[in-house]
Length: 81
Length: 393
Image (cartoon, rainbow over all chains, first blue to last red; front, side, top):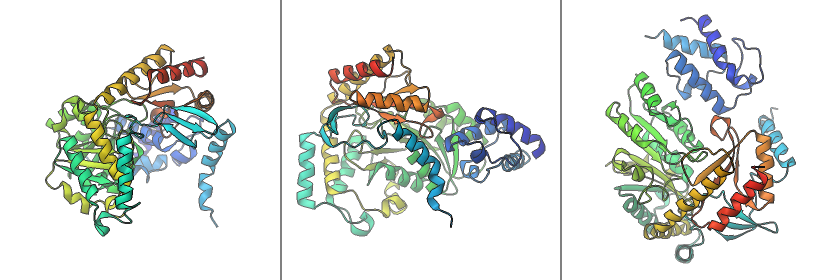
């Protein structure tokens, strides 16, 4: 899977957490721009994990702030096999 | 210059909104404690229904006497860590008493329950290991996990099938620790221990249960979740606190592993802090004796919990769990309503905990009650009556 393919899926998964209806883009800083608290971010990451059937350890979450950061990590995991 | 505190501006604004609506729910000052379930705040007597004083043991004469005796004989403090300054005999006595109570071989006492989680989790797991933690875990578990440097995998609350799926994905090797709680502090529900123990047949891992809210409360012997489920052998490590059923301050970790005591030299939150004060240790020992000798306290707690649970549900209020628990959380629709209702409860003479995100699971807003064995049925009925007047209307 490519990052370009993953980005729109991540944006879809962000829908229920985007309570203020912000426009989502690759560079969107998920916790800061969408005003999601720490638990909300972890809940969202669980949705991403289940959708792509990968593990995203909590240690990684703090380093993946933007949609593109997350897409890169997902792509690396999906293409690892 | 970047003002370091400016990043907390949003918290300050949110806090101010709460203050503007009435009393500071996060900073109530009890001017006088009359009993385990009554305080004077200002010039009013308040029924306390949010103290986690499950056994109502804080004014027990034998426990108070033990604390006074310890102050007289050992002084006010230990002035250092057990590694640097050595132990007092009573630290070891408390560890022996707890191990006996729990039916386990080893026990280590910590200065606070928070430090017990920091110490045990960071001592057990390291950077090459993986910790699987329930999504609704207490902050002290999250912090302990972070301190360990282990890979951290969060699984869906109380969902052993979800844990199974996540363990199957893992390919990193290293040790694996699964962390559960006996009673979850916000909603009052408990881990389905049998489901998680059964997973041990499929995956290699060691299992830790934090019985902070369930020690003294669950099981025929009050040992916690494993005791209640008849699955103590399936639990490798137990953590608990003295700040709830024991009515003091401190915490413990316990287990049967032959290397357990080695943790004393591997846990920074144990090594680099002053050990528990003599009065706190002595009152913990005495309270543990009361718990062992008076199982009827546990029965009173459950009778009171059932009464409050039934009463609040009869008002049409939605609770955090469908199972009776000493933690009874009433769900509120939003933060502003929660603050308003909390103030109305307090004005009417009952103190409960106000719990709002991110300190709650699923962004829930809660009026959280905790029941005590020291509540009378009249107290419980009064709490229900006040909820009826100000919350269920």
